[in-house]
Amino acid sequence: MDPKLRRMTLKEWVAVESDSVQPMPHFRQELVRMMSMAADMLRGLGASVHSMDLGSQQLPDGQSLPIPPVILAELGNDPKKPTVCFYGHLNVQPAQQGEGWFMDPYTLTEVDGKLYGRGSTDNTGPVLAWIHAVSAFRALEQDLPVNIKLILEGTEEVGSVALEELMKKEKDGFFPSMDYIVISDDLWLTRTKPALIYGTGGNCYFMVEVKCRDRDFHSGTFGGILNEPVADLVALFGSLVDSSGHILIPGIYDQVAPLMEEERKLYEAIDLDLEEYQNNSQVEKFFDTKEEVLMHLWQYPSLCIHGIEGTFDEPGIKTVIPGRVIRKFSIRLVPHMNVSVVENQVKQHLADVFSKRNSANRMTISMILGSQLWTANINDTQYVAAGRAIRRVFGIEPDMIRDGSTIPIAKIFQDIIQKSVLMLPLGAVDEGEHSQNEKINRWNYIEGSKLLVAFFEMAELHS
Image (cartoon, rainbow, N blue to C red; front, side, top):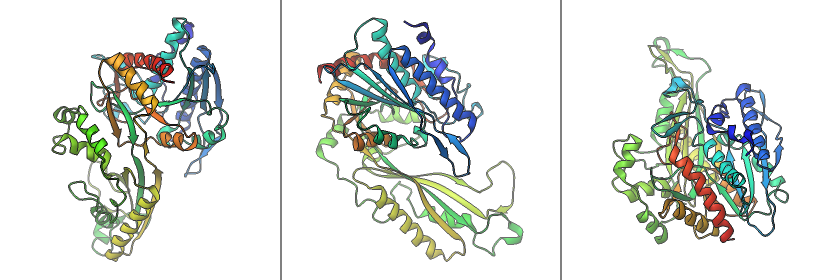
């Protein structure tokens, strides 16, 4: 094997601060470096690699930052073999050691067989596992049983900037000859049992601003004589959801698909230990039964409140009335909910509630993200091949699950390329994606690479 390939370890890849969320030149430079490292490694395997320039991104504050290039790579073009296309992303969520990490998040650290580091499970680690699976055939001087295509990007955590336009442009170029499309993002439902994901949720993300003026007020001078923006905001958010998680927006449940008998049986078959799930999550109590938990995760929409801007949140005392506040929340969509319908329902409801307060303040509602949900057919050939690969490597049947997370690229693939997508996660439920102390179990990482090798062989058999 090329000595250069041996140096391309998970430790080296995690060391790159490929944060796409914070709009700073340093992180964009790191993202470009990350994409270059991946391209070099693929070329070392003999792949044909195209680094697609997507130009620059104009941000709301006026600055312009380069969009990291998208890598389109191909390895093999034998018309007698099926073609497996893999999508992954090499950008990560922000991470700082002072925010709850027990180590430097960009220094891969092994503790008790667990590999800690930002991107280890989302999604740098799984991407590297795919490349290692390909390199295993090269190292053993064996012919790949399938043709491989890879699409690697660097802005998934911020909406996959310009990727959809690139896919439309390459629809008849890079994408036509594909039999399988696979995404190894997301997680299993448990710590020990592999899963195949056949659906993810949509997401409508809203920002609500209530404004009196741009500056704060002294509470001793202005308290009690004006409508406080925070009070308006609290009233608005108190009207969205009750204490049991039931959404109070009129009509929000009208589009929700009824539970089909086939899916109910899938829920019953899923191996989920509620007590273990609660302990892993450090939550005192979820809903009463396994089926209820799964229904709330996958069958019912959920509304979550994410944060508030404009208020004093530092230690100490500051007696001000905020003059302008913004609150953020999202609604996770389930079949058959529609983004535009939900947007209209939310805006109408909040406008009605606000008007009844007779406030002199100004309210603005904006939906800043609207992603449709995705579902697949578990009887598709690639799900059959993946299930058999899991049985070969792990010796058990996989859980067939949906997930409330949103992975827009799956829906984009199905809409543009008109191909079914397989979601093949490699990480366990407790890996901590997007959170502090993100990790991937060493065993999962090694067995995941074996699983991908087995999937290539099963894909050949089931083509």
